Length: 111
Image 1 (cartoon, rainbow, N blue to C red):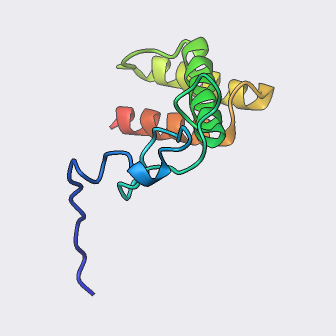
Image 2: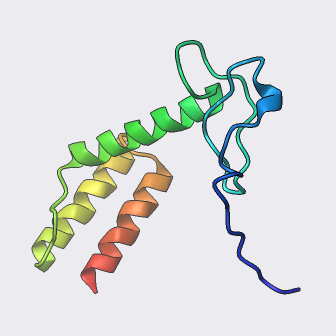
């Protein structure tokens, strides 16, 4: 099998008229198709995408509250950031996937 990349056209990223009788979620999936779930009242997205957005905002806020160094240049700053991430995980302020993402970024920064 050949690995082909899928190019999405602007026509594929437009709402389908056959679902115009109710307001649909305005998010598009990775394959270019629109989410067909009904949109929440007074919102442009469905329940699932609203929850995903809220989770992403909570994670961003938790990371901001950690107060990590912007660019840790010295080993002491790296150690401090590792300590903050570890303590936040133990205290339950961040979840495991956020911890993995932060530790990956710290590892890349140490190179």
